[in-house]
Length: 103
Image (cartoon, rainbow, N blue to C red; front, side, top):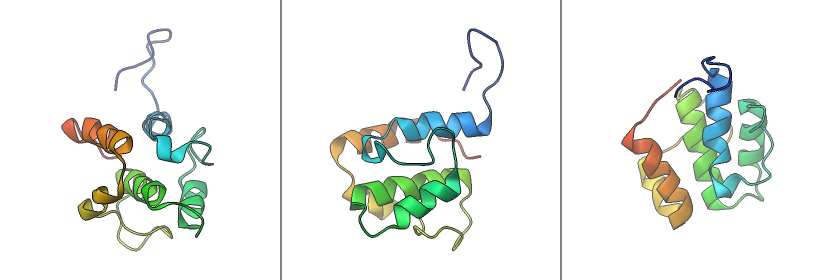
């Protein structure tokens, strides 16, 4: 990602994650996106009332942030889980996958 055209300053890792997370419709209204707070997002994603697509997106984002096994309450991201995403959320994931990054 490039810096802000206004300041020329390189975005922080938290800003990068907030931007990526904010693109997913499954996370509309989710806490922990702006500002980026992975622990809050993890708690939200682990709650029983979240749909499968939201849980998959949360797991994906947390894997990008810190992919340590058994670290997140919402579970580990697996590629096979992408089958649970609707077309719109899957397209956003595909855009990331075309130029993947991890923090």
